Length: 306
DNA sequence: GGCCAGGTGTACC
DNA sequence: GGTACACATGGC
Image (tube, rainbow, N blue to C red):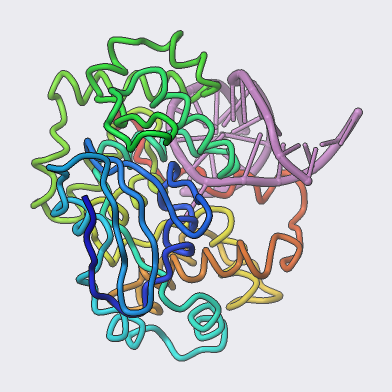
């Protein structure tokens, strides 16, 4: 029921609370969440991560995969550019890791993310799991926990029922995407071994999935560390930190990111994202004129691709 | 009460 | 090609 994973440089809080995953909860010194069909409780002690499970035959191998323990973090961070913004982000949150998520849960979660705050995404994901997810075993005294609902279950539930989980206009996207997946028009498992560009194109053919969400799934689930999701935070950060007084377009910034941040650009992105969100804040960057900034993430999806 | 949130789809020019 | 706006809901 318990295990210890030897690891150094693992910041559990930064990792589980940096907007990669949306249903891990802090409980005192521990973090509680579900991986696959298993509830786990995690705790950081010097040199180790300690884990407890909700049942004797828990899938420890899946937890190990999920945690990204095998990443050579020192080496990866060593490939980041030596410029001041990147080094500041790096030293602000040492031990931040990329997780390896289940593609469906990751895709469905980020489908809900558009123009929502992270706290609201968590709320929606929680409602979806409570309402449609199978219960999993938890130790007595712990609040109930659930699997993330299958595509089949969400497709069957339909748009109206999904709307009741406060998804708003995103309910149509989730229902449509769940249907595509459950009808096996698109097989998420088989994408695992396909080239990154092909995976991205396949994901972007789904309703409600554009470049940004596709890149999140590429990075957080398919572990393509070259994927560099650009959301409003990263956009502001790149402009403010690397191009002050200019106003490069999104495409320009994406080309810049592709080369500037190296082969593990996605990792660098996560450090920048977490740093600006937790330490610098929105006020750190000049607000653009109304009506321009909000819409700058548009027009990356090829026309008529769904 | 108004602005904004880990965007995307669509209708315009 | 690009630009503007709708889309639901809630935190601050």
